[in-house]
Each structure stands twice: as structure tokens, then as C-alpha cells.
Image (cartoon, rainbow, N blue to C red):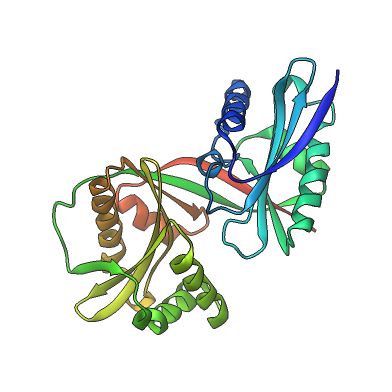
Length: 288
């Protein structure tokens, strides 16, 4: 058996993308869907910063393993995962991919890393444990249908303007525990990255929350969603989410997706009230 590996940066060309799709489909025999954890939704994006390590069985001219590392927030912290076709999983392919991923992250100035695996993937959990990684937290991906807003409320959503900065710094600091510099970095990232749209939520003249959206085909992703702590429990979060669903359907999108830490019970209640249902869960690991 002759194996070879290459490293390619985003975006992927069509042929490589199709090879990754096929690898994910082959691996589905173990009962999991791998397209999201392997970053296929953004694999052809020019806006995302990251790379793939691809391993081929040269005798069969077939992709049999891959690793992906993405700097999601543009803060030099990479989230990575590995997928190997089931019949090749006891050959050390996964460990070799991790070594190349680590070299690639270091070469790109990585200041931190998180390893990902799908909830219930015993192979993934065992693999990361053998590498010395410990469980840190989990994020659930929630899904809702885009739909027309039936009953407009008091909340209005408009594109972010610079005059909103101080109000949103306060909201981010109180909602996420960020220091001022981190809040400013988040605002800068969400307002200057192509493909992202940052929104400000108002009731009357008062800023009460914010959300950022990103279009991926027929899907609208929600990130950086926050409501001012003194305005929580008043239905403002539900109204914001319903407005985004209305916005999405008017952009010919069908689905809204978002990620939330499963320990965040209050956020989960808001999302469930707005019609979001869990579609999958990713478990994050750190190396001490």
C-alpha cells in the first residue's frame, strides 16, 4: 500500500471538494454525518482562513483520510478535526495527519487550538484521548426553517453603525464576559469580514441587542447573538431570531443554523422558544 499526503489551503477546487464529499459519505457507515465537522460548508470560501491535509491511497487513486484546521474567528486559534475512511483507521493515518496539521498551524502563527469530534463518536473520543487531549466543552448546532414574520414586535433590526459601538461593547462584555479589547476585536471582525453582516437591535431609540449573519448557499448562519442583560426575559431575543428568519426567507434561503454551548441553558431556552431544534453536537478537546 502506497500512501501520499498533500496540504492545500482554502478555498478548495471542485475536484478536491468532491473527493472530500465522497470521503464523508464513505465514513457515514459508522452512523455519523461528517460534512460539518470537516468544514465542507466553507471549504470553497475565499473568506475563511484555513487548510486541509489530504491523504491518498496511490494504488487506488482515492482519498482515504483528511484533516482540516480553520481559524474561525480570525484570532489565530484553529479548530481542527480528522476523518479517516473506516478500513484505514488502524494504520496510523490519523496520527500522521495530526502531525501535519500541527506543523501547518504553527507555520500560520497559531496561538491556540481546539480539537473537534462528533457527539457519540467513540473512535474520535478514543483517538483524541490517546493523543493526550482532554474534553473541554460541547456545542450543539440548532436548526430552524426560514419563514415570514407573522407578528412584528417592538424590536427593529438594522445594519450596524459606528455609533452603536459603545452600546455593543457593553452588551458583549456583560453577555459574554469579554474585556473591552475583545469586544472591539469581535465588532471589527464581524463588520470587516466579507460575507458577514452585523445587525443592531433597537426598541425605540435604545440598543437592546445584536446578531451577526452569514449566508452559505441556502443557509443563513447566526453568530455573536446577544441581548442586553437588563432586557433579557422580555422576548427580545425571540423577536431578533424571528426577524432573522424573515430576512433569510426573503434572501431565498431555507434554513437558519447556529451553534450554542450545551451548558448555556438560558440561551437554549430562547432558541427553542424561537423554533430551533438540535441537529448535531460537536465535542471540543484541548491538549494540556
